[in-house]
Length: 569
Image 1 (cartoon, rainbow, N blue to C red):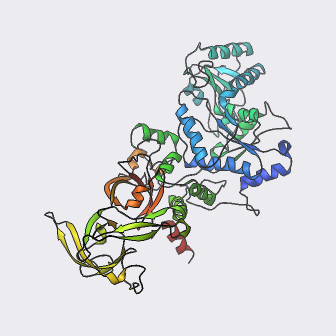
Image 2 (image 1 turned 90 degrees about the horizontal axis):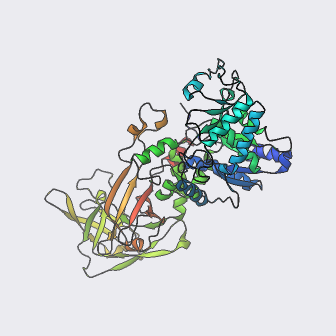
Image 3 (image 1 turned 45 degrees about the horizontal axis):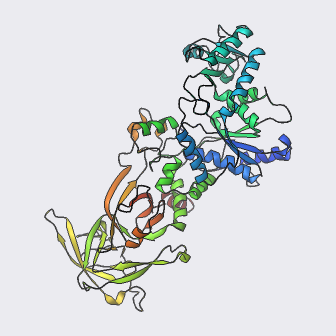
């Protein structure tokens, strides 16, 4: 099982191992002392937080060492690609604060150069057209301990290979009927060297090149060559490409020489508890309507995290904490949540909201009286100022803040007990009324005018403090209470259908949540608030003038910080 770990390995100079290797290459004058990285997403889905770890490295290391970073779309499979994904990927990268300037490229920019290289390799006897089925080719691959067997078409004459390859691209043959393979070594201990496929037939029109091409390059052939054509010096990728590296180097040596040659470096991918990172599985969730689109706040996609209220700085902080290593790890989602809390604690505006309201009537408070109490917008940053909150005879409080027969250590409201209403008065509960179903309908209390917050002598202590909202001024809003999408810690390691592991309570929608009027008047898309005693909430894009929607970003309870405090004792 993958180890759950957050430790990162850094050199004595504070650099991670990728940065250290790049620094060494620059010091040695490789590639003329030039640094150029690239982020090469496939436009067949939305970016998730694992991709963020990758491009934070790609763009970050270029920035740190004075290099450049390209954005290159790996658009070599028109059957799965869409401009929707292209636009979404660019938005997400910009949202995290990175920009590629004028260095936007596509693998399709190099289709002619790649095709010409393939033709050259055919002429040199390094590639051949194979007419076997994919099943037949797979059966001949052998095993890691047993060599493969040669294709019956491996020694086809060069002229015949050239003719067939040209006719493949002309559209004369069906998809799957032929492929172009590199002629390398069917007995090589690295399975990727056993005559890998370079090109396959795809007749779906390409969203950029139309029907110009009927053959499309495979990743292992296109990637390194595209790096070379762009002048990329360091191809930084995840650990699953370690066994591909020799093939990357084999193909790129068809073009490169000692003066310039791209280098591949691998780091561990980001795996997160209670989450799946497979783009195929995420697409399945979207297509089967198991979530509400790619930007569903339960998704690990960057647009989903953004909609939920996660911030770029929190995501970057999380990636920095887990670091880059040479071994796979399963990272705690609690650490990500901790990073989000730390960031929002510094920036989110504090407001009062009552999620499950019950009416509190202060019977000795005049019916026609109103007061205004000043509330700190953020006690962590007093420069953000204060706002006014109206206080009236009738208030909304949380239903859970009242008990008829409380246990000994219940310090909220109960009959004959005193509590302080936050920033207002101390009140004593004098009674309550139930409806015909036996539910509490109204709670009654009396206030002590001498205990108004801020007045001399008003510092009398009581153990409980409750938040509240004025009934006449409260605004009813919708709150979408999000939890983890999966009910098990490591869904990827579980047997069976991953969809059976979904958390049935990952979304609870609450209507008629009461918020204070200042909050209702200051909503704007993606604004962050801390609802007092409840958690952090973000304004959802579905919000309109008549219908305000908040997404619950994260609760206040920080299990990560608590566990870390325990471990240091």
